Amino acid sequence: DISDDSVIEIRFEKLVKTAYITLDIRVLHPNSQSNAKKPLAAMYKAHENEKKTKYLHRIREIEKANFTPFVMSTTGGLAPEASCFVKRLASKVSQKLSQPYSCVLSYIRRKLRFELLKTTLMALRGFRKSKYVSISDLDFNLLTFYVN
Image (cartoon, rainbow, N blue to C red; front, side, top):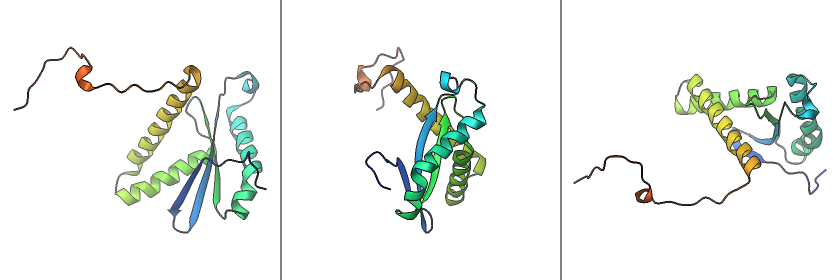
């Protein structure tokens, strides 16, 4: 069923040779009142199942793609399927770039956590238009060096 409220957030084309991979992202807060009495594993499972119920059939049957519910918590943890996806992505990238798997995996996890932090801060304080400032206008109290 394709409806107006079904929105897929990220689609990787040809990450795997013949398949498309579609992600739908959900961020949960484990310390909220609605999650207070639940164990973290149960929270992850419930959110993954909700995403699968909503999107899995449509993506597999209509779009002919693979679907991964990408659930993460505001504390930086990943649900089991999201963790598997990140590990698989790190494996592919490390092979392609001939880099150590551990370095690529830590880089991807670090980038995800910083993006989560930026998104959380934006949700708390609201979006603020960025102000472009020339570097020459900033006063860093540093020594001035001239290049000839």
